[in-house]
Length: 485
Image 1 (cartoon, rainbow, N blue to C red):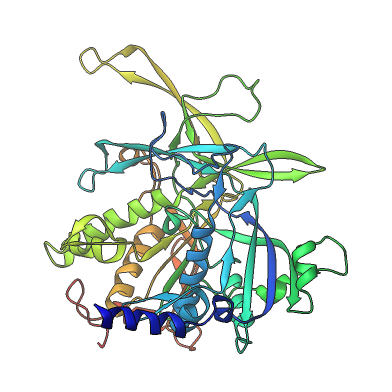
Image 2: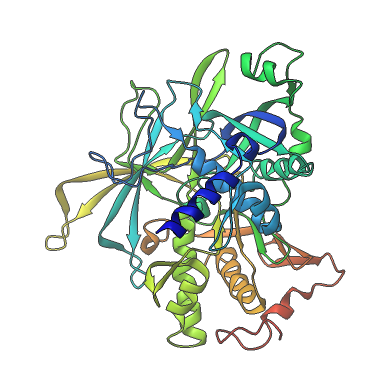
């Protein structure tokens, strides 16, 4: 017992005073960034609330939507780790069995700037891949922040002695907020895209500026801060060199209807159809007032569901029984498979429809017994009709595509281009068929452009000087990975 007491006494006497264990911070850099949502965004609480399946996370104090600092810090760290995992650990800290280092970055919660910003509710439904009809008991809704919503948050970088490169790493991570980083739920289906609208930065060299940092942090005096040059924070391309990227510009070959509950910005609007095309609203600030604009869209969720169902069909045709495996391989697994979850590797953007040709179609249900109109079954649909002025660009890309996966995506592009793959509802009565006008495809440093000169002729050009796109379609399809073929 005496030996133990003696050891404890020696250990206590040799322990350094706590103030000797400082982080030796030489500089504090404080960023204040204003983020604007480019697409609808869902930052959820993980719980259902009231009538909503997936409500937004809200500040318990004032009830306004917020983005937590943990969400932002995780997104910044993940973006930096994609290109430099060691730098991410060095800047944002690491916890392993043998090592634990705290982060040099302090990220605050993002606060909503405009208190009267609106939120929207978007409905979704699971689709049966066999009959392409809505699956039973798979209806859900989620609350979204509108595009155009702005948030402000603070980020502080602590520069220790010898950590001079940390500032460059921080700028690299922040640059991801200009298009590469997406926040929240369903970011691979078009949600959560953000950009930096503006920013300020303060720099405090210690100990010289210690009093200034303590007494007047983030002072608005002009000599205290400088405006962030957004040109220096331009984000590189979202997709990497190995990603298979598609930009497919189309027009309508037939009418299009992706159903939504009718709504109007003007509460005095009358005679709305029973169903109409889905729209996305955007918050715009003009002359100090908040306004809302709406645009007809093709949601990323709708397009992804269509592509997944057709991928299964193509794979089963080429190799019977392989459809589920291919769908899971590219689009992820929503339930546990082989003991693990995995997310989608395909990113699908939300598509705005330019110059839509709107029309209200009134219909009536037919009584199959009498052959006459069913009583009380008159309904109307607000849909889009074909027009040469109407156009939209579908954008999607696949992370780290190999040769066989690139072939499968090309077949999906072909089916969309040739009006063989309908999008939206009522495909059984001819709706939702598209006609390709132009496609831009990038993969492994190649760039192919496909243009329709008329309905019977297309022209393919390549960055390599030869139209070698068809070479991807050669060889075995639907089997195992043949990336080295």
